Amino acid sequence: MHSGRFSRGGKITTNIAHLSVGRFSEIEFPLPPLDEQQEIVNRAKTLFAFADRFERKYRNAVSALDKIRSSILTQAFRGELVSQNSEDEPANILLERIHSVKAEKDKEVKKVNSPRKSAMPKISKKVVCESIMQLPEQVFTFEDLRTTVSGDYDLLRDTLFDLLNKRNPIISQFFDGKLQTMKFSRRSQ
Image (cartoon, rainbow, N blue to C red; front, side, top):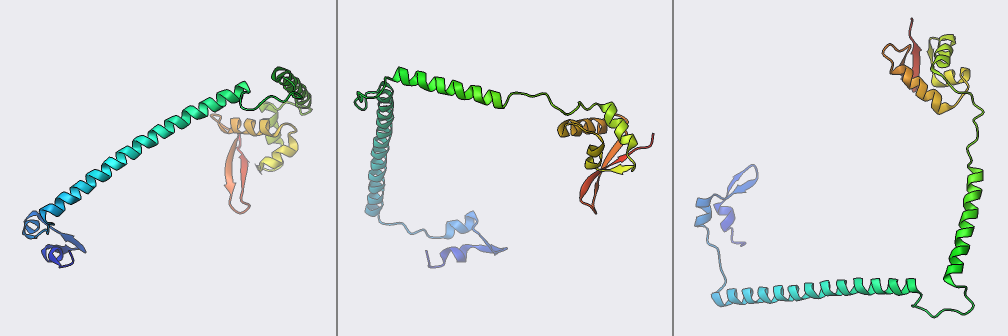
């Protein structure tokens, strides 16, 4: 291999050696003696057979492990893995107690998270439009608008986007590069 036979037969272009069929046919390929070739084949067959046996054992072990795992879980759910402590309460009583504690916690959560009537007034498109027209400046920010319209932030934002998406919107939106903020501009009617 290190005799240079391949490099002499190759043609160099763009740093890539090309071996055409004609050039390849001129190169000698050293082969081991026939008995050594047979020994290589026999060893390869032996190793493949070993790999096949190993794979079968592995698959059988995985299958057995799955069955054992299933059996252990079944026994655990039946309570057969350890002996029952005479001082422990029966499982059905324990489950009833767990359910009652959970039900109590659910009631407490419902009390804490119960929907309350919002103290904020509903925002309508008409109110937002009127507020925009009454702003002292033609260019304004969302925060400027929020100071004049009291209500839910998300509802005001959604209403503003609805106004922007109208066929003839009364406002346009742009990015103020100096202040690094979004602004709105009131359009003349």
